Amino acid sequence: MNKNTFTTVTLNKGEMNVYDFGGIKLHAYRTNDFIDDEVFIIEKNGKAVIIESPCFFDNIKELTEYLKDIEVEGMLIAYHGAGATFLPEVPKYATQNAVEFSENGGGKALIDNFTNSFGEIFDKSVHKITDVMAEGKVTIGGIDFVIKQTDDAFDVEIPEINAVYTHMLGHDCHSIVAGAGHADGIIAELKSYIEKGYDLILTSHYTPEDLKDAQTKIDYLENLKKIAANCSDADSFKAEGQKQYPNYNGQNYLDMTEGFFYA
Image 1 (tube, helix red, strand yellow):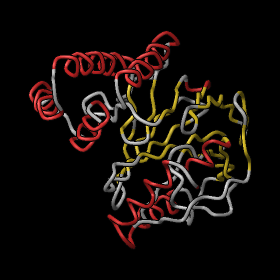
Image 2 (cartoon, rainbow, N blue to C red; image 1 turned 180 degrees about the vertical axis):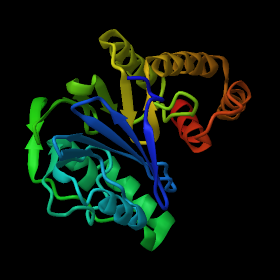
Image 3 (cartoon, helix red, strand yellow; image 1 turned 45 degrees about the vertical axis):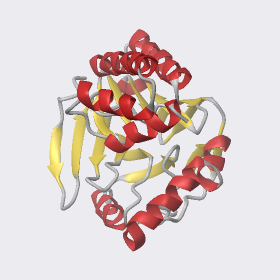
Image 4 (cartoon, rainbow, N blue to C red; image 1 turned 45 degrees about the horizontal axis):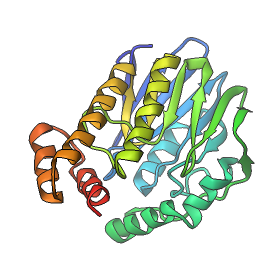
């Protein structure tokens, strides 16, 4: 499936890009919220499983309305634990480390920061997980998923559409890179995607991407390590990153990366 082969449904705030695989559909919801969230709905035989949750109240209302004629069988809550007013009666699935990430770890810190930044328009309530998963295959709503635990939460392989979901990619934007070792880990993961030949890479903050985008990100990360090796301080690193990637989004992520490389 080509990443650009979709039908767009324009909504009041966000938009839905629908990929039709025949017996199964992928609905990619672009929220257009302040943190560029993406939510993914895998639909088969009138039933659906949702990956991640919107966390702004207007998006929650909008997506709930969109799903009114689809029977939602479950929701996979990995890196985005906020937004618990969204479909509260639907079963929620996560690994144990993802539960801890959202309730007590780095995910909770992000939720607290977003609450301070956005106030009452942000749904800070955390989804209550009803089904704790282990690594491996899980079937929800007649759809098979393969769960892979990560340091913070988990990634999801969707074999029927030859796709994988992970937290972040973004081939033309900066990413949070916690030093050279972290960069190497991301590179290894992206190389594994290329080796497996996924058609689509789904992420929490970007429209669906492909293997060319994965290679672009690998090249970016390799170069970022070189920039860090050749710069003696944080200011020169940041300046060089801006110079070499003048059109990249995510300046705040570059700032965070700078802090990790020059702690």
